[in-house]
Image (cartoon, rainbow, N blue to C red):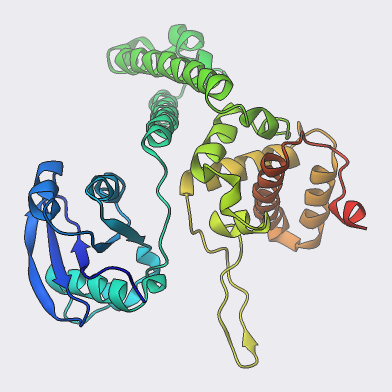
Length: 349
């Protein structure tokens, strides 16, 4: 039985939030909308006695949760992927969505499949990683653009690393294209400098705020960016009773659709943090690539790649990424460095 006497569902919007308030009997005792600002939330819910509030995960859910909890409310952040009864409603509206969230919170909060939001400091540190990722993507797109524009004239630019592209190709740009391409090279130079600055900030945070990243970086293919992203996304290894749950949390396990004798083979669920999943896949690709160091992980991935025919390499990369997610959690939980020849089956025996 819930200890709360008031249940509130809030359907969040970019400018306004719609809300519905229920009492213990399920009767609607209030509804309306408020501005999607801190002042708007305090004005609407500041004088309400401690309530159980249900919202959906989204752009505004993290700061909204912190603001409402500071007022003394209990806030559950629902997983939108699990709330099909809301997003597939034939008469869907903001008001009906808010009412449905309130009723789920009153009857069985577990149906919300509540998600965990990271803390404010972790979110600020993760913003550095996201900003770096954006700068890297923009730089790559500009480099592709420059090469494409030059190739259209029948010329080709020399091979170059990304970090030194703007200096190495500067004198190989055709004269007629320099008015168009020189500003792009200047932008690439600025982005390269920004990426280096982000790398310094990431290294500083790894050393001073998140010492557990040293354990994670002992795994081949896992650098400061991947290690910090992993630590910030999971925040606390105690969140998972089993290390295997980390792979499912990051969407690296197959979806399942089983009924009777039919059990379909489906691709991975792709739930959880997309950015960290992409980083783990990149680490797995490095391990299976020509520069990957010899270790039990690499040999395991190569064995999987040989089994699957034409798509064997792709499946092996995903399988190795899942194994990395599990391994990193185990190292973090145990406080141990990576052993290249560690065999969990032999250790268990």
